[in-house]
Length: 120
Length: 276
Length: 133
Image 1: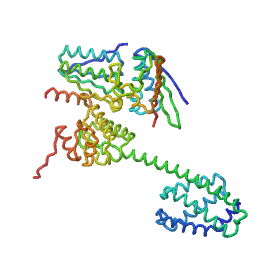
Image 2 (image 1 turned 180 degrees about the vertical axis):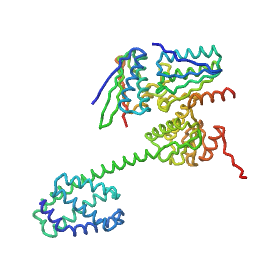
Image 3 (image 1 turned 60 degrees about the vertical axis):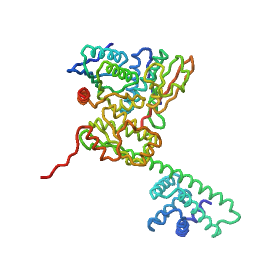
Image 4 (image 1 turned 90 degrees about the vertical axis):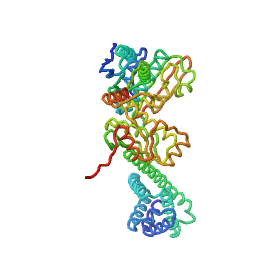
C-alpha cells in the first residue's frame, strides 16, 4: 500500500490537501514529492490544508516542521490551514508549538495570507 | 427506658421546644435562627423534635427519610454544622435535665439512663453530620457544574473579531474547558482575532499565565491571533514580578483599545460619521 | 469489568492499526473529539516508541469502569532493552531519536493517569488511562 498525496499548482503556489490519516511512509514520501515539485516549478508559496486530519503525533509534526524549514531554504513560504481544535489542543499538550509557522483558518484564508506575504 | 424517654418527650414537647429555642437563641455565633420568622422557626423546631424522637419510636427506614429531609432543609437555611451539633446536644440536655427534675431519672438508674442517652444521641449526631456532608457535597458539585456552564463563551463582536471574557479563578480543569470552547468558537465564528479579556480574573500567577500562553498558542495553530486585554495595574505588577514572559503577546489595558487594535489587524477602523 | 483488545507492534503499519483501534474504542465509549485526538495521539506515541526502541511489542486497549466512571486504559508493553534513566526521559525536550522530544512527558500530559515500569534488559510496561468525564 503506497498512496501519494496529490500536489496541485495554482499560478506560483502549490496546494496540498491532506485527506486521510498520514502513516509514516506517506508522510516521508510527501516530503520528497513536495520538495521535488518546488524545484521543478519554482513556486514561491505552499498551502498545506489539514482540515480532514483529526490527529497529529510528534512524528507527523516533525515531518511537517521539516517540510516548512526545507521549503523556506528553497525560497518558498508555507501556510498550514484548517488545523482542527482537537488537533491544536493535543499538539500544545504534547509540547509541540510549531513556532514561526504561518497558519490560517481555511484554504481560502491561507491563500489570501500567502498573497499578502509574497507581495510584501 | 427508651419508651420512658419517648413518652417523656411527647408529653412535654411544647415545654422542651420552647426551652430548646431559648438555648439556641443564646448561641451568639449563629444569626440564622434569630432572623427566621417565628412561624417557620416553630415548624422547624417541631420537625427537629420529631426527628429526635423518631429514632426512639419509628422504624429505621422512617427515621432515615426524616433525617434526609431535615438535613437538606438545614443546608438550605444555611445552618452551620456546629450549630446543628449544638442543637442536638442541647435537645438531649433539656430532656435529661427535665427527666431528672421529674424524678424519672434517679441516682439508682443514672448509669443506665446515661448509657441510653448516649445510644440515642450519638447515632443521631453521626448520621446528621453524614447526611449534612453528603447534601453539602452535592450542593458543591451542582454549583461547580453551574460555574462551568457560566464560564467561557466566545462572543463575536465584529466580523472576524471575537471576545472571550474570563471570569473567576482559573484552575487546570477550567483552563481545559476554556481552551476547548475558545478553539471551537474560533472555527465556528471564523474569527481571525480573539480578545481574551482577563478583567474578571482576580489573580494571574505562573500557572494561570501558562494556561493563557497555551491557549494563545493553540489559537495560533488553528489560524487566528490572540490578544490579551483587561490587564489591571496590579496584574501587570504581578506578571513582571513573577518574571512571566508575555512578550510574544499583544496586550492592552482595556477591551476598547483591544478592539481598535483588532480592527487595525484586519485592515479596518471605526470612523465617526458627520450628520447632515 | 474490562474488555480488551490488542495490536502486536512489529512494523510501521502496526502503529496505524493500534491508533485506529484506540480511536474506535474511544469513540464507542463516548469520548469527545478532543479526547479522541488525545487518546489516538498518545497511542501513536507509545506505539512508535516500541517500534523505534524495542523493535517489537504490544499495544493493548482496555475499557475500564471504576466507581461508575468509564475510562480507557492503554498498555504499551515490550521486551526491549528497557529505559536506563526514567527520570531523564520524563523531562521535557529529551529525545534519543532526533524527534521533537515530546515523547513520554507529552503522553503523560495527554492522559489522566500515567505509570511506567521498566527493567534494563527485560523490557518496559507503560499504562496510561483517560477517564470519561
